[in-house]
Image 1 (spheres, rainbow, N blue to C red):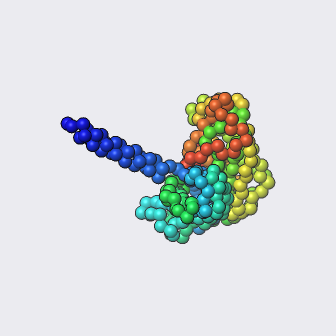
Image 2: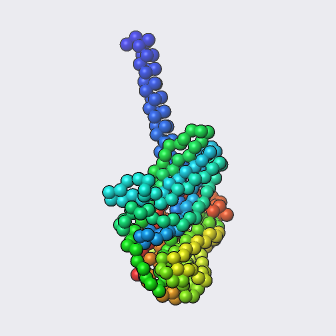
Image 3: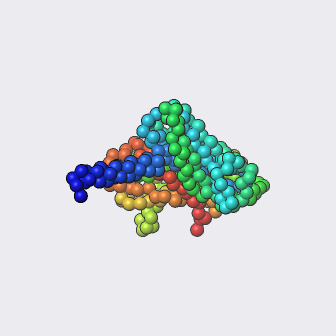
Length: 298
């Protein structure tokens, strides 16, 4: 092969590697989670009833956004992302880089949604310098829609989930946002507590209490949310812990059903050694798409 031919072959190979590198870069950019969303919601929702959804979204697009739109919709067997299954639509304007937006809204299930198991999805897109970003679709949890029930003269408290950070260290103060609902038609008869605690994934360590939320009363078909900074006990060892929420642990409130009083996170929180990073006072240090489940008391 002549020296000139070798140069031509080398340049062609260089172009191939260059195009391949650009392709990988574009794939990485397009699949990056530029609008990570966390949400808490009751995964057991009676048909034709309202529900409380709390969400947080961060702008990781690398620049300011003219608008940021988040659509929540349900998809199940035989269903797609049709507009008539939209649960909620959030629209933010003039969003700064790295900004975190929160929302707590009461929503109603769309009429076409019948009892069954659904996946709650988010569809997010932003407008940056008049250029629209790639639309991102993310599943964030499972929703069980149950037939409408009318527990006349009954209270029915439902755990609505907790927003929590993905990573923290013992001794850090982290922001927790929790919500509950009363799907019964009767107000609670006396004050009750809601506890939030860390449970080790191996269940070999005692739970570490993070919060005791005291509620005087909640009306029939009512809902409530609470947000506060709570300190992780210094005694919590590094590792992975699930977040647990229990309504009325003392059993003071007569209810239509107590099977939906306990919630446990689907994804764990990572407790790291305190010397790794200082997250003190930083409410939501990082985000990931997670979901939650409600499990029956045992």
